[in-house]
Image (cartoon, rainbow, N blue to C red; front, side):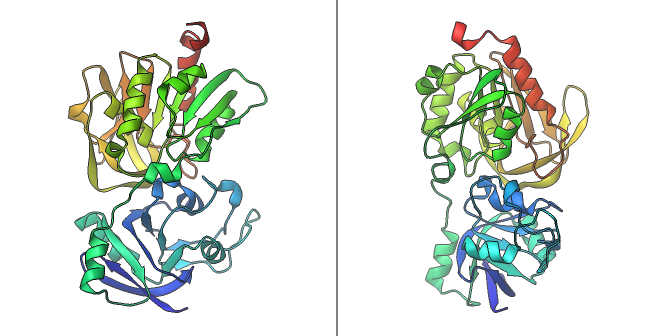
Length: 363
């Protein structure tokens, strides 16, 4: 394998071996702690614009399984692993990781000390990095690297046009506002007899209410939530209609912003399948799958909002329930593929909320 280099914005250089697509990539360097679920990581739209480090040392051992993709293709900018498996073994596998990275033009680096690299990100915070064929950058190239920013994230990851997913037996109609949604969210709704209308991020509140949905799902997605000012304004309009609403990850943040709260960029975020979320009402801790670099500032929430979950590690806001409207949201992923399914019951809570609310069509 040819040599390649990971150059960090702080000047640190790691030498490794190139695999996957032999090219260069610039992105925000983040790490994920999942022991499994690399297929879901590679295809999660929330990783748009980022170079991902896998902290687990062996990646690719069960191959690539398209049925488990969370979107139509690979969404990351680059992939860093300690070791990748050249001969995967799984009855569902349809190929190896190296081949799929090449086909999707994703540069990869292996044989890097990912433990040392992760410690740098953990201590210094998320920073930009480039996968390069050369070990040094010019001053101009370093300046460009430091100035890199993820732009038009939601615009790039949202659906291009509305479409429907129908269950065998329809009980509810849910409008899934797609900001870069994982496919597992729609699957959870369909499995609960919901007809799901997936809507682009550019959809307006008036267009959504015209559909007369029983519920609104605000999806996950990439980027800085506060940059989505137009979407935030439309969510605020939509909330006035009191339609049962459930927000996940970015959807959780956008809903809070629409109610006057603030968000903050975290030091290195939560990414992995082992994040503890404490339910404030019961004191019970759920192990959750998460992927976010921003958080809702608890102190900025309006009096009409109650924190329903907190991260047990750093006390950041992980969930909000609103008292003035039928709406709630969580920062983690209750659909959790791959990851713990401890909080899948939140979809049932959403179903109950739609059952108990007056049908929007009759209002």
